[in-house]
Length: 435
Image (cartoon, rainbow, N blue to C red; front, top):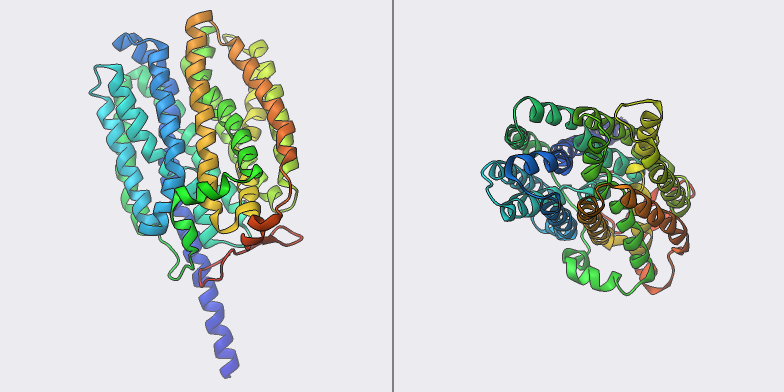
């Protein structure tokens, strides 16, 4: 009887732990969805800010550049801050920042204000709830399904980025761009109580004191070749997603006579397919070599970008829809295998290291977002940009294969291993809830 009672109590505890873990994941997903909605609005603001305030596309592109760089630079410090303040406070603060930044943009009269409000404030908020947040949640609350959970939470970001696009586009057409900014600010405020109630840290989480500071982690990681290879390839990922598609696809399609709402709808198709692609990539990462997955993703993405200038027309036809589906499946699929490689090489430091790798992602994205605006102003078209980024994807496809398996002193200190089926052994023992 005593054994039976103990077994029943243990079963109940495990069920409660799983429920808490999934509740945290749901709250994190809500924060990520709302913050993600801010990531793609800048692409819809290029035309309205040019027409309403008389700003050049390169001036708007500068604000997008600052947003993406701040977004990337925030990620590793946010991951370290979660060790000190907890995930709940960081997520709530991020929602306050994006809401405030969006509200302040409605008062702009000069381009520098767009750089400050959208570039800095929104960049800080979205960076704190970026893929590094997803990696931290999966690291602290899950063990056997980390790749899958990383994929699901990354997909949540994609949902926010693209599901809001048709709505925001319709609001901008029916009313004005300021109304769209107010709607996003309101969404951040409404999500805040639910995020505060659900997001939490495990009651007892063993922490490696080395991982509490972002700069020392960077110092250790920067002495290894895998870190720089991952930074470089993930920068190409940012250039070929946030940099070109999320910033310049809508204005490029408009140049070919396509309505902005139609272009936004195609981006939404990309977003919907992103969900399937990212979740599927997370599942595959738990089972296959992440380097080969990344090589395939970059190669196929490059091919789609080479084809895009030939496909853009004034109407949404079958080839463009096929492009949107394929690009969507590949778009954010790079995140789970990149996180897995960080975990393989850097163990306890992995969430913060991935934050620095994500900074490279955003530097690449911001550089191409700005360069795309400059190219459009100089040549009157975006064709050079599509082809150039396609070449970068081809280079990344080959480069990622040179990332070697973890070995040496640094790898040995990581305290991370993988089972034959890809389930990770936690980098430090703890009483955290795992699923």
